[in-house]
Length: 195
Image 1 (cartoon, rainbow, N blue to C red):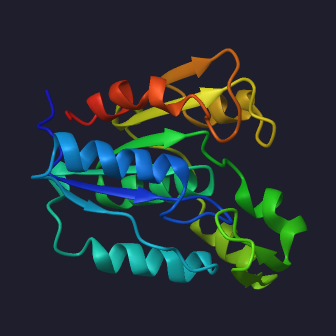
Image 2 (spheres, rainbow, N blue to C red):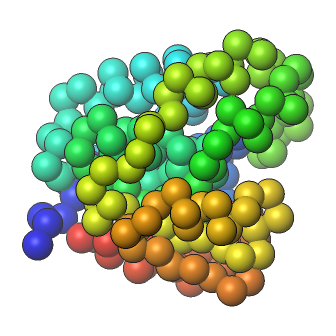
Protein backbone atom coordinates (compact mmCIF):
# COMPACT_ATOMS: atom_id res chain seq x y z
CA UNK A 1 0.00 0.00 0.00
CA UNK A 2 1.40 3.37 -1.03
CA UNK A 3 1.53 6.16 1.55
CA UNK A 4 -0.76 9.16 0.93
CA UNK A 5 0.80 11.92 -1.13
CA UNK A 6 2.18 14.86 0.84
CA UNK A 7 2.84 16.98 -2.27
CA UNK A 8 0.42 17.35 -5.18
CA UNK A 9 1.14 18.96 -8.54
CA UNK A 10 -1.68 19.86 -10.95
CA UNK A 11 -0.88 20.52 -14.62
CA UNK A 12 -3.42 22.31 -16.82
CA UNK A 13 -4.03 21.68 -20.51
CA UNK A 14 -3.36 23.55 -23.75
CA UNK A 15 -4.82 27.08 -23.79
CA UNK A 16 -5.77 26.62 -20.14
CA UNK A 17 -4.52 27.93 -16.80
CA UNK A 18 -4.66 27.42 -13.03
CA UNK A 19 -8.06 29.15 -13.27
CA UNK A 20 -9.57 26.18 -15.13
CA UNK A 21 -12.69 24.66 -13.59
CA UNK A 22 -10.96 21.35 -12.73
CA UNK A 23 -7.84 23.00 -11.32
CA UNK A 24 -9.98 25.20 -9.08
CA UNK A 25 -12.10 22.22 -7.97
CA UNK A 26 -8.97 20.33 -6.94
CA UNK A 27 -7.56 23.44 -5.23
CA UNK A 28 -10.77 23.83 -3.17
CA UNK A 29 -10.79 20.11 -2.31
CA UNK A 30 -7.18 20.29 -1.11
CA UNK A 31 -7.72 23.50 0.88
CA UNK A 32 -10.80 22.18 2.69
CA UNK A 33 -9.90 18.50 3.15
CA UNK A 34 -6.09 18.32 3.01
CA UNK A 35 -4.66 21.72 3.99
CA UNK A 36 -1.48 19.98 5.19
CA UNK A 37 -0.64 18.74 1.67
CA UNK A 38 1.68 20.93 -0.38
CA UNK A 39 -0.27 21.99 -3.49
CA UNK A 40 1.13 23.58 -6.64
CA UNK A 41 -0.65 24.45 -9.88
CA UNK A 42 1.74 26.53 -12.00
CA UNK A 43 0.89 28.57 -15.08
CA UNK A 44 2.73 26.66 -17.77
CA UNK A 45 4.53 28.51 -20.57
CA UNK A 46 3.62 27.67 -24.19
CA UNK A 47 7.01 26.01 -24.80
CA UNK A 48 6.78 22.33 -23.73
CA UNK A 49 10.53 22.23 -23.01
CA UNK A 50 10.25 25.31 -20.79
CA UNK A 51 7.10 23.95 -19.14
CA UNK A 52 8.82 20.68 -18.18
CA UNK A 53 11.97 22.51 -17.05
CA UNK A 54 9.86 24.79 -14.83
CA UNK A 55 7.97 21.82 -13.38
CA UNK A 56 11.07 19.71 -12.71
CA UNK A 57 12.82 22.69 -11.11
CA UNK A 58 9.77 23.29 -8.90
CA UNK A 59 9.74 19.64 -7.84
CA UNK A 60 13.45 19.51 -7.06
CA UNK A 61 12.98 19.56 -3.29
CA UNK A 62 9.80 17.44 -3.20
CA UNK A 63 9.90 13.87 -1.79
CA UNK A 64 9.52 11.35 -4.62
CA UNK A 65 7.88 8.65 -2.47
CA UNK A 66 4.93 10.86 -1.54
CA UNK A 67 4.70 13.01 -4.66
CA UNK A 68 1.52 12.89 -6.76
CA UNK A 69 0.76 14.57 -10.06
CA UNK A 70 -2.56 15.22 -11.78
CA UNK A 71 -2.99 16.58 -15.27
CA UNK A 72 -5.70 17.27 -17.82
CA UNK A 73 -5.33 16.86 -21.60
CA UNK A 74 -1.87 18.26 -22.49
CA UNK A 75 -1.33 18.47 -18.73
CA UNK A 76 -2.02 14.73 -18.62
CA UNK A 77 0.78 14.22 -21.12
CA UNK A 78 3.08 16.34 -18.96
CA UNK A 79 1.94 14.42 -15.86
CA UNK A 80 2.97 11.18 -17.56
CA UNK A 81 6.41 12.70 -18.27
CA UNK A 82 6.73 13.70 -14.60
CA UNK A 83 5.60 10.26 -13.37
CA UNK A 84 8.09 8.55 -15.67
CA UNK A 85 10.93 10.83 -14.53
CA UNK A 86 10.11 10.79 -10.80
CA UNK A 87 8.57 7.35 -10.34
CA UNK A 88 5.51 8.90 -8.71
CA UNK A 89 1.78 8.25 -9.00
CA UNK A 90 -0.25 10.14 -11.60
CA UNK A 91 -3.92 10.89 -12.18
CA UNK A 92 -4.67 11.64 -15.83
CA UNK A 93 -7.84 13.36 -17.01
CA UNK A 94 -8.49 12.72 -20.73
CA UNK A 95 -4.71 12.74 -21.31
CA UNK A 96 -3.22 13.81 -24.63
CA UNK A 97 -1.47 10.81 -26.15
CA UNK A 98 0.25 12.34 -29.20
CA UNK A 99 0.24 16.12 -28.64
CA UNK A 100 2.95 16.69 -31.27
CA UNK A 101 0.57 15.34 -33.91
CA UNK A 102 -2.55 16.95 -32.48
CA UNK A 103 -1.14 20.43 -31.82
CA UNK A 104 0.78 20.79 -35.11
CA UNK A 105 -2.36 22.42 -36.55
CA UNK A 106 -2.42 25.03 -33.76
CA UNK A 107 0.83 26.87 -34.41
CA UNK A 108 0.39 30.62 -34.38
CA UNK A 109 -1.39 33.02 -32.06
CA UNK A 110 -3.75 31.44 -29.54
CA UNK A 111 -6.01 32.70 -26.76
CA UNK A 112 -6.66 31.15 -23.37
CA UNK A 113 -10.01 29.58 -22.50
CA UNK A 114 -10.32 31.46 -19.22
CA UNK A 115 -9.56 34.90 -20.69
CA UNK A 116 -9.75 35.43 -24.48
CA UNK A 117 -7.85 38.70 -24.01
CA UNK A 118 -4.80 36.65 -22.95
CA UNK A 119 -2.82 35.73 -26.05
CA UNK A 120 0.25 33.60 -26.62
CA UNK A 121 2.14 32.27 -29.61
CA UNK A 122 2.48 28.52 -30.15
CA UNK A 123 5.63 28.25 -32.23
CA UNK A 124 6.28 25.46 -34.78
CA UNK A 125 9.41 24.39 -32.84
CA UNK A 126 7.16 23.51 -29.87
CA UNK A 127 5.83 20.56 -31.87
CA UNK A 128 9.35 19.09 -32.00
CA UNK A 129 9.75 19.78 -28.27
CA UNK A 130 6.65 17.65 -27.67
CA UNK A 131 8.10 14.85 -29.81
CA UNK A 132 11.31 14.97 -27.78
CA UNK A 133 9.41 14.79 -24.48
CA UNK A 134 7.16 11.85 -25.47
CA UNK A 135 7.96 8.82 -23.29
CA UNK A 136 8.66 5.72 -25.41
CA UNK A 137 6.47 3.52 -23.23
CA UNK A 138 4.75 3.78 -19.88
CA UNK A 139 6.52 1.76 -17.19
CA UNK A 140 4.89 0.52 -13.98
CA UNK A 141 1.31 1.18 -15.16
CA UNK A 142 -0.02 0.57 -11.65
CA UNK A 143 1.19 4.11 -10.83
CA UNK A 144 -1.38 5.58 -13.24
CA UNK A 145 -5.08 6.29 -12.81
CA UNK A 146 -6.87 7.69 -15.84
CA UNK A 147 -10.36 9.15 -16.17
CA UNK A 148 -11.24 8.78 -19.85
CA UNK A 149 -14.50 9.90 -21.45
CA UNK A 150 -15.95 8.11 -24.46
CA UNK A 151 -17.74 11.40 -25.15
CA UNK A 152 -14.45 13.34 -25.51
CA UNK A 153 -14.91 15.47 -28.61
CA UNK A 154 -11.19 16.31 -28.92
CA UNK A 155 -9.27 13.10 -28.17
CA UNK A 156 -10.03 9.47 -29.08
CA UNK A 157 -10.85 7.44 -25.96
CA UNK A 158 -9.57 4.23 -27.60
CA UNK A 159 -6.18 5.81 -28.20
CA UNK A 160 -6.04 7.08 -24.61
CA UNK A 161 -6.88 3.63 -23.21
CA UNK A 162 -4.32 1.95 -25.50
CA UNK A 163 -1.56 4.29 -24.29
CA UNK A 164 -1.96 3.13 -20.68
CA UNK A 165 -2.28 -0.67 -20.74
CA UNK A 166 -2.44 -2.07 -17.23
CA UNK A 167 -3.27 1.29 -15.65
CA UNK A 168 -6.36 1.90 -13.55
CA UNK A 169 -8.81 3.32 -16.06
CA UNK A 170 -12.19 4.81 -15.21
CA UNK A 171 -13.95 4.79 -18.59
CA UNK A 172 -16.96 7.08 -18.74
CA UNK A 173 -19.70 6.24 -21.21
CA UNK A 174 -20.47 9.89 -21.95
CA UNK A 175 -19.02 13.13 -20.53
CA UNK A 176 -16.78 15.37 -22.67
CA UNK A 177 -13.20 16.58 -23.09
CA UNK A 178 -13.54 19.10 -20.27
CA UNK A 179 -14.99 16.40 -17.96
CA UNK A 180 -17.91 18.65 -17.09
CA UNK A 181 -18.96 15.99 -14.55
CA UNK A 182 -15.53 16.03 -12.85
CA UNK A 183 -17.13 16.67 -9.46
CA UNK A 184 -18.55 13.12 -9.68
CA UNK A 185 -15.06 11.65 -10.07
CA UNK A 186 -12.73 13.90 -8.05
CA UNK A 187 -13.06 11.88 -4.83
CA UNK A 188 -12.10 8.60 -6.47
CA UNK A 189 -9.30 10.21 -8.46
CA UNK A 190 -7.72 11.78 -5.38
CA UNK A 191 -8.40 8.58 -3.45
CA UNK A 192 -5.93 6.88 -5.80
CA UNK A 193 -3.31 9.22 -4.33
CA UNK A 194 -4.38 8.32 -0.78
CA UNK A 195 -6.26 11.59 -0.28
